[in-house]
Image (cartoon, rainbow, N blue to C red; front, side, top):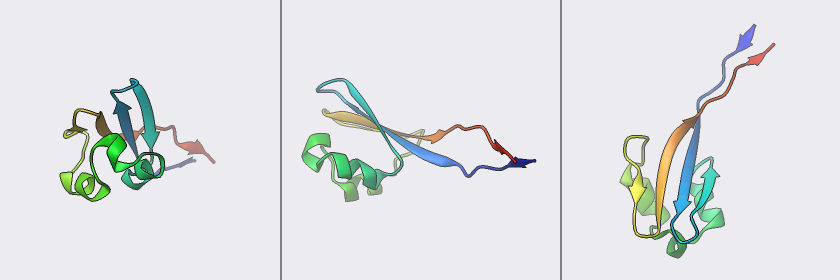
Amino acid sequence: MEKEKAERTVVHVELFADNSHHYFGSLAAIYEKFSKEEIGITYGSLRNYGLSAEKPYQNKLCIIRKGVLITIPKQK
């Protein structure tokens, strides 16, 4: 019997300064690692932007994309 998994969001942050890639489970988690100065947008503004898979956020410092983590359902 397969247990259905809840859809999990993943937020991908690509920093242009060092071409690094970082993955987060929420928008709030981004701000635990980076300051608003490092990514060029405040938490409130990013929330209001309406980030989605079809609408990534980009500025001169980074690009932030939102997607769904694809997993295999657990067998019971």
